[in-house]
Amino acid sequence: MLGNPIKKEVLIALGANQPSQVGPPQQTLALALERLAEMGLRVLKSSLFYHTPSFPKGNGPDYVNAAAQLEVALEAQSILAALHEVEGEFGRERVQRWGQRTLDLDLIAIDDEVHPDQATFYAWRGLPPQDQAERTPEQLILPHPRLQDRAFVLVPLADVAPTWRHPVLGQTVAAMRDALDPADLREVVPI
Image 1 (cartoon, helix red, strand yellow):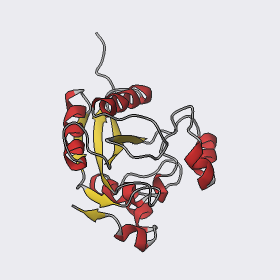
Image 2 (cartoon, one colour):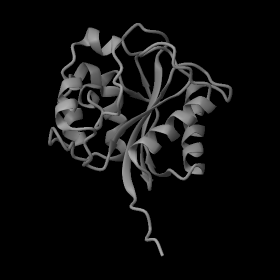
Image 3 (cartoon, rainbow, N blue to C red):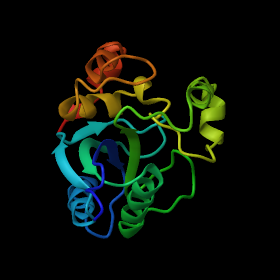
Image 4 (cartoon, helix red, strand yellow):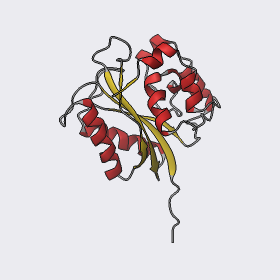
């Protein structure tokens, strides 16, 4: 008899700035969370929805962003595949990096796992902004290498996992959020 699969705490960021076939971004995010639960990715907590400026600034309509804490008995690549499947169901097309989208589901972290290793994490974290916009990693990098820089991720993430500690940087979500420029934090407004 096989034992129960090991369940992992998974943190994801959600965003949209284009309507999907089900409606405006806020409705899309809510239904995407329901769809994840239907697929067996148990939603433990979800954040408020936030109005945020487009990223990079001026790159299309503003976003609706959120975060969720999931409980999942899958490996990293299977979790990522499930997130991409749900994005596709809501009309996501991967045309332009950081482009406009009907749904974006970003895998932010899985427990205290580091994928593939700390050296790769630091290499991607340190990329100059121009390279960040043009290059896409060929492998999954966790935790997300720029989560500590983004108010539109950290503010919602603090709603669901303020005490989660970054396994490389050693800071909690709340501490990383509080270290951001106050002007950036003010741009993340609850809906």
